[in-house]
Structures are given as structure tokens and as C-alpha cells.
Length: 400
Image (cartoon, rainbow, N blue to C red; front, top):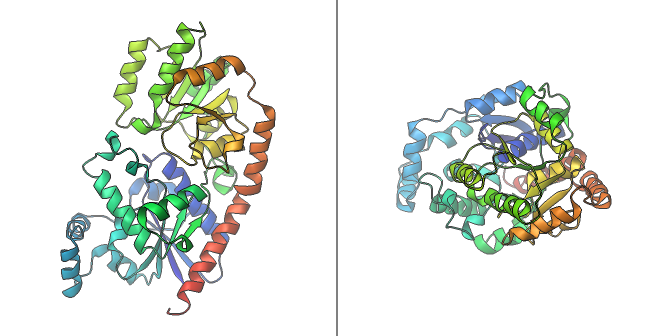
């Protein structure tokens, strides 16, 4: 069976990029005897990154024909018409020419809509736009609510198999998109910061700026997240204000991530509250710098509005970093290993930080590390992806 892993994340995609890299590594290293694996890349930055990691890649060049067909495929009537006239879209023609049997989309992709004859599978990460359609990132012209909903719905219904990261996400996708439970597989998130070939062979070094900060700052709290409004950075600023005014305490927070749509608002809020000395913003950090920031911080603090699970949580488990997370949001499987706080009340986190400050429970940290090794290690994930690939082979054996 010819399986194509379609890598369309870019170096601006943060956690999605980390997850897709690790997925690619895990599937590549399985070396399944009945699968001929190809890695197809759709942007130059990802292509360079994969080649640097010793992946053999095939480049798919996007052009105006893809946009043209995407417009055609926005209408059911036009889809019917193109099929009736035998007009094949460029994307599917590319994969058919290479005799690909199944395309593996490691995240919901706009290109999946072109798969009318070739089978595909999809990893669905997020459907929170259904809960908070008011957020600015879900109103974008090119990736707003309607497009997200359409592509996710298409993927849930037309994929031969779907992957999600948690049992709670499985129920949500099934309920919201009428996707049969038997078709949905739960395989946890994975990060290329943790153990594995990508992590062990990294040649990146900690830069002077980040290295000096870590050396000079004893206690800081870490929040690695791109500046989207759903990441809720403002909550931490309000918490800092309470800590400073009510408790007369100075805490330091480190933010790092690409400056997305909410960065200017966060930046303005920092200035308004006079928190320039309390908040350190690193726009981009490399792998080694990220690891060093995890290992030396007092805790990971995530007031996110999204995520039954999140990559930073998994990374923190591995690096034995205490975790503070939005109350009642995580999947039940992960909840015992974190400290929860109420994102509707900044006092909730402020009180926890003041009362515990330096000690956040060695027992939870050790349990989290044990949980990682037993459920999220490369070996465990390879087992799960191997079973998933076996399912694909079994399903297609009756007609290939």
C-alpha cells in the first residue's frame, strides 16, 4: 500500500508544526513491511526543515489552479459538474500519478476537499470555534468559522478513518459532526521536543539572550503560546496586577510564540498595567531554548480557552515541570497531574501562586513523568500508529 504523509504545516504554525514533525518521525520509524511511505510537502520552509532532519520529501507546488479548484469545490453543484465532465483537480491528479492509495493528513487540511477518488485519513485537533465563534481568529477571511466548519465536517464524514487526541475529543467530533465512533481513533499528541531521533540529533544551541535571562532570573513562570485571543494571555496580566497590588509580590512571566492577531492588544495591556519588567516576550525560540525554559521555570501556566490536552502540558510532563491549567478543560486522563485554576477569576491563580510559590508538589510531577513514559513515549505512540496502519491495510485489502 502506498501511503502519502501530506505535510502542510509551516514554521509559523507553532505547536501544530511540532506535532506534525513528531508524527512524521514516528510513522517513518515504524517501517511497516506492507506500506510504502512517501512524505509530500507543500511549503518551502517545511520542506527545508524535513530535509534537514534527513527525510526524503516530494514537493507539491501550490499555484493558481489549486485556488481555482477550491472555488469550484465550494459549490456542490460545481463539484457534480466537474465530475460529470471528467475534470480532475490538480492535487488529486498529482497523487494519482504517484500511485498513492491513501493520503495521511496530520491535521485538518483544505486540500482534503480535493480527495474525491483517493482515500484519506485526518487528524482533527480542534473544533472550539463551535463554542466561541466570537473570537477574532475564527472570523478570518481565509480561515474563519465557515471554512473551518466546512473542511472539518468534510474530513469527519469523508475520511476513511479519523484520529483525535483524547477520548473527550472523540465524543465531541462524533456529536458535532455526526461521525461514527467506530471510525474515530484516539492517539495522543506528540512533541518533537521530547525523546526520539529529532530531539536527540538536534544541533541547536541556546542563544545569548535566552541564556542570559535564564541565568539571571531565578523564578519565572512559562507560557509558550502564539498570541491568539483563545490563548488568553490577558488573564495572566490581570493575575500579575493582583499579585503586585494586593499581595505586594513581583512575579515574572515568560511568553514566547509568533505574534498573531492578539499580540498588539496584549502589548498594549502590558504597558497600561506597567508590567514591562514582569513580562518577558521572546518572539521565537529554538528547540534547545524551549527545553531550557521548561527545565528552569517555576511552572508552566496555561490559561487557554482551548484544549482537552495541549502540547505544552505533555512537554512539561516530560521535563518534570509543574503544570497549572484551565479548570475543567483537560481530558480526565490528564487532570490528576495538573493544578487547576478558574480562568474567569484572576484571583484564583494569584492565590495559588502566593500560597505555593516555590513548591508545587513533587508527587504530581513524578506521577506526570511516569504517566508520560507509560502512555506518551515514542515507543507507546509507535505501537498505536502501527495498530492504526494495520487497520488501514485491513480495510483496503478487500478492494485494492
